[in-house]
Image 1: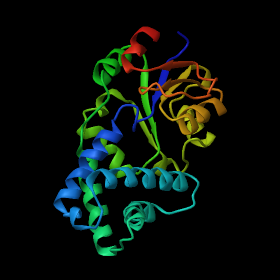
Image 2: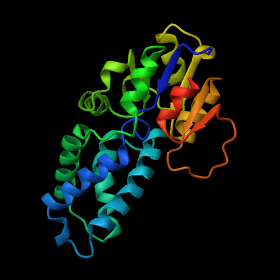
Image 3: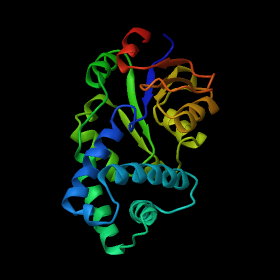
Amino acid sequence: MKYSHIFFDLDHTLWDFNRNSAETLTELYINHKLEAINKFSLQSFLSEYTKVNLRLWDHYRQNLITKDYLRKGRFKETFAVFDHNDDMLCTRLSDDYIARSPYKGLLFPYVHETLSYLQSKYELHIITNGFSEVQRIKMQSAGLMKYFSNVFISEEVGFNKPEAAIFLHAVKSCNCTVDNCLMIGDNIETDLLGAHGVGMDHVFFNPEKLEHGYKNATYEIHCLSRLSSLL
């Protein structure tokens, strides 16, 4: 293979964001007695929070909101769906979520086996959107740091995926060229279009086998174990 450097996304690709977040939010729901809020079931809380969080992360990537608003606003706007307003509770939930969530260690199947195999053949790196203190805790808690030579976090680099600058920064920092790099990620907009924009081959990790119209992926996989046969 022509590749010598492989870049991985972190959330939703290695670290199972949905399961780790749901586990954390369930703990918050119980510990902060959110069932006392009218019509605020656990399932409705998880569902509405997920939608709000996705929307606000999109706004953050576009520099439309601040880091602080993202962290607190996702709870505030979730409460607003249920006509509830409690700034103090939103602050406590935000602090508690940030304190708990990164220490969750649920990964997608075959993460350790796949990374161990790839590490023997390639230089591995992370390119992730997110906040420094959170992303590094996630990797350390899940036992992932040992596999990667470099971790490029958008907050540290100063650019968010899919901006070309974060990919080009990573390539330059690794002293390689785009032609011998491969990006692996789950998000068409941030991971795949970002990599495609700089001419980097890329793997679409699509574990739920979602239908889509993206035609430019070099490879598409539904399980990380597939990488062992591709690479």
